[in-house]
Figure 1 (tube, rainbow, N blue to C red):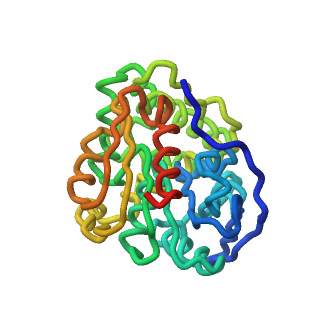
Figure 2: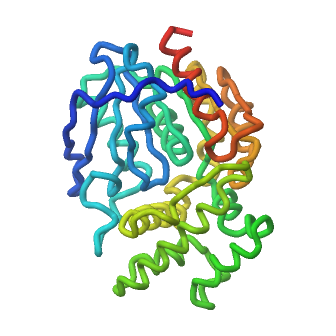
Figure 3: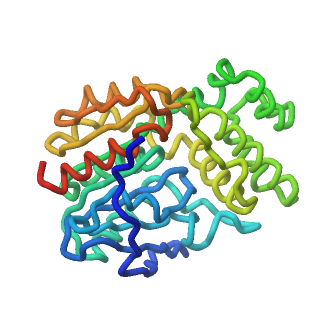
Length: 319
């Protein structure tokens, strides 16, 4: 398979930004300081930014901004600590952080790129501040709607029944018929570190199970460092247990706010936990969007990286 990504680069600026509520965000800037501004939103929530993702941008033509969202990656306080307060980590907080970072860097408008959870955050940001967004390039489309969270935590049990029963049965019997994400969140904040670690591992096993039906796709959350698993699982369940801190159906209902913003939606047909109709309905409601459906990709993998890079290259060239 081809690899359209650009060569690896190192950031030319690395710093921290105080965004209030005791949060300090790690951010870095790479590429061309005079290039087209773009911000990259990581998934999870909780995965943190990574050097490889900036390879989708042409470093000669883009000024690439990456940052670790609240409590994730190298931002502090970190959700992998034994105790952490997530009460000031919500979608509106993250949207405000994006605006604070944009202003801090002296950027008037920027392209927004995100994958998975980064799609939900990118859409929320663009709908709140459309005047600050030049284009959107989004991969593995998610919406944060409650039906989709139910689909991932319950309906996927019809596709992966053995794995789902293990996922569900890790919870106390009294918690198994309710909101599974919220129930896991309670375990992930248990005073006993062994309870927290076991819950984080089981949550990550389920994440690895449901994200794709594509052959050869090899997610590795369940083999990650236990502290990272705890951080990741805490943040995902915090958001999912609270409906991603969005009104149900909000992003589709407000898609009209994206009118005039060019966008590319890239989605894998084999993404069983992120049904294609989420991307389709958004595309139908968003005038000016292009939907690219990949027959070889799930929630990532396949030719998704190539398709995203192609879209970014096109926008860098003014197309």
